[in-house]
Image (cartoon, rainbow, N blue to C red; front, side, top):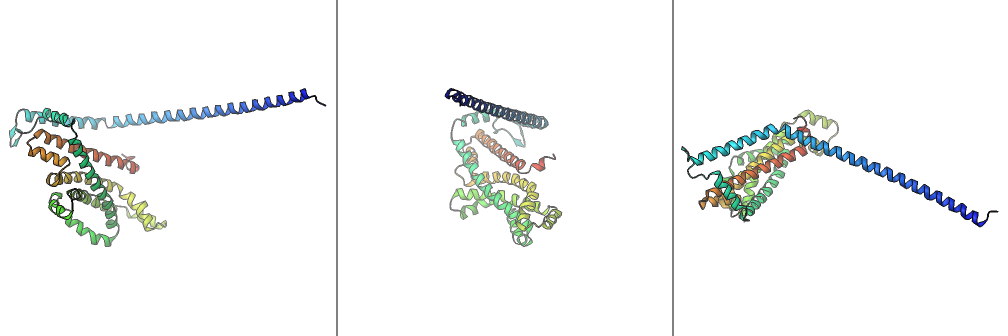
Length: 315
């Protein structure tokens, strides 16, 4: 029979072994966790290096285009400076045109005020609302008239009659149609963007390879699945072309509407500068309009690269 001291020693030894086993398990788990963490960090580093390498490759591939673009802008600025400095008057008169230095001074002066920024925000909001409505309705209408003959026979003649009417001609009618000037300006912006979008979407549906449609039909695709999985993806290049064109026409329409009936916005700002004989401010307004249009088009192209990665893989 074991004495109490030996029994106690036996349990103490067992506890020590159990604690040692637990400690070893925890230690091994910690090592595995550290190895996993190290592997994750290494993969993150590899991905970061790959992304950096891809970025540098993209910059190198487009370096020639960037340099040529910078060269053309520099040449335009130089011509502007020389024409205004020497007061060129050869049918086109540069006597009252502000020089680049005056425009730059005006831009610096206006950057310290809130007026120009408020006008930019108002114009961007109007373009966003009008263009968003035009994109939704234009893409939907283009898909419908491109897919269904009955819809094309009913709607296409109406679009073709209204499409040639310039946005500026809609200004008096829009003022009478809508209760506020804000609504009328957004409506004119919508009209400017709508027709390029709907026509390009329509053309994208018409240019789709009919073999793809027949193949989807043979695999049991219904009309809804056919529109979602075949027709819409196939027409996306044309759709984004229409979106880019529509955005440019939307800005043109917006500026015309703001100059005639607006009380705020970058178009109103530019026309007010002309009324007050502030020629440098006119040039600033034109530069802001061009920059906003450039950024808008770049945003659409970026969205196109995300939505249509297969198109850009072969370029």
